[in-house]
Length: 398
Image (cartoon, rainbow, N blue to C red; front, side, top):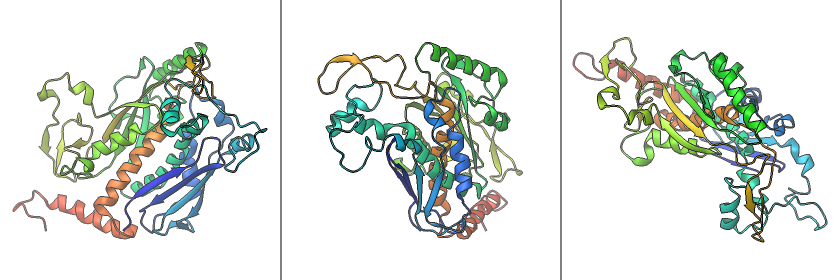
């Protein structure tokens, strides 16, 4: 079995984005229409910028899949950037003459990757930084994650995300199991209730009128994950640590918590720990009476829904630019303006779902891995059976 790994390549206004996914077993049904449906969700959202009026994302499968079924070899995908038609000279991979408009940038945008990237890579044109740092790259992540999501579905694992705040506006606390996820999908701001929907939109409208941007917090939940994904035995195998890294890798994300992590710090221990009781009806033969831990204890999934909260800051590019500098001359000028969203919370939800899917798929492949999906399912069934035997008279696993 090949170790699970994935990578993307490409720039925001370049010809397109390339995706490679390795380690998916043979025998998994996947097709371009399934991937496109997931990618289309990333393109929706109240407060989106003009780029989404140009692009219609679709990943073309170019390797690793035959007749809609994975082969066990690396999966290759290609996503065309339609906007490249307007940037053929500026973003050409080949040398171009000096008299062509190269659309170079020297004005730094505070809060973007421009400044550290230009100094790190010695770029005098910060477009060399912002093109790859752009959130356009998340289209490729969602394509990769679509394969991971499809694998997880075979093991009864589903993933959803919603906005729980936009700016200072917060939605009521709702148990993820009680959320109507169809309502979330229908909401342009991915709110779970009509009142939050209206308040989130009003906050975005106010930010647009003020010529600034606005952030928020997402709740990302995985249902159906079995107990025992990840491990306590090594720092780099802890599932919550891997989830946190994945979420922090999303553009503009600045905070992650598992379960009610931050709120737990203000509560006494007796109100924080999830009490365990016997329950013969549960596949684990036990259950927790609460889920403050967010489905992960000691770096391992415990069988409860995995709940993650992800804080995403306002986008750096604004229609009323901040004061800044020219990277080459040091002149004090206005920051550059590049077309962007007013609020990216709703559009980031499918990206966060995707990152959770990629982490969980990796963990599932580690735990139950095989060269074929059939082999994985046999491994999974045997593992679940061991829990059903565990705790019966004699305390032995058959």
